Image (tube, rainbow, N blue to C red; front, side, top):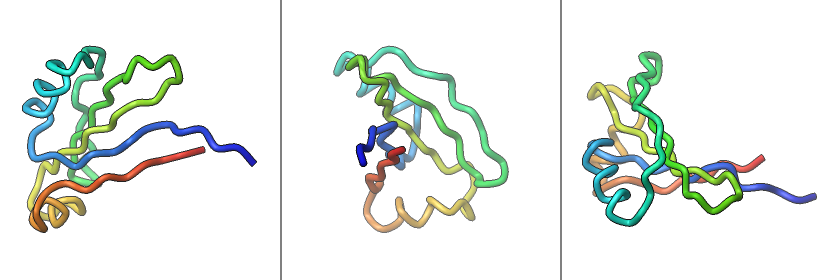
Length: 84
């Protein structure tokens, strides 16, 4: 069975701040942050431009009770990937 990497997820304190870093690195194509009120996060996808349709997903907590808030409290974001 072969897997295809779809996206790499990063938990960040601020999508807009992290986008600035990615733009310096040449990643310019992205979606506007979209809020998910159920998970209490905002998400934005950045195209890596590698031709393989692999994206970087940036997740920012929008409320202290967000499930990802603890990731940031424990010393920074965590890396996650999703394959299908």
